Length: 237
Image (tube, rainbow, N blue to C red; front, side):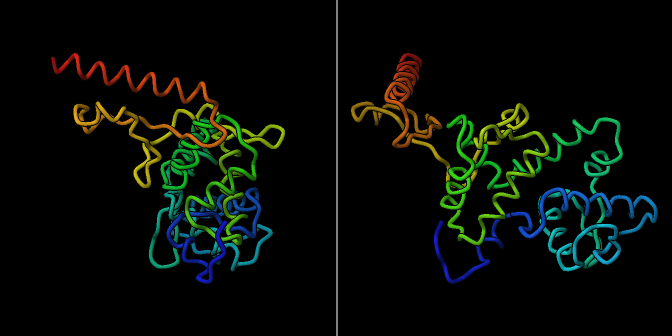
């Protein structure tokens, strides 16, 4: 990850969880907020949240992330309301379904899209490799490492990611909810130079090739690309 003097600027651009509280503690804060709202039927402030092992400052910092990703709805300044998805997660009949919908909110963010796309291409990666990849992709600093780790832990708790022997992979729901990457697309236009002028401009192939990509996989991608090019030519004829 990059060392930068302007610490915090990257965090303002990306929705990343608060790093000083573990995920279970952050979920407890959301549970307390949801319970308080259910009893009082009015917006909640961080001061209203009790019964959690966290300072009021840490509670406030925790809530900001969940508002950014849509788990919480904003009231007046400093006030929050639980989203319907969050209420269903804590109080509904089908917690598993509610967890899937909450995970989707995260996977739809810019960093969530990049994370899911990377894992869909790599299959399994070491936890540190995933953290370093995301840090490099978004020019984060070393101080953000725990924020990325909290994001990964949160997705694991929701079932969107699975960890085994310190390797991370997409869970079933993570695979289903991969969203098209809108920013900084990792695509390569694979086509031979002589066919460049004849191929339609919207013929792209989303691939992720690095130094560790097996040669056979690269050859397979090129074969697929050439087949698609031939299809275009036949259609034009």
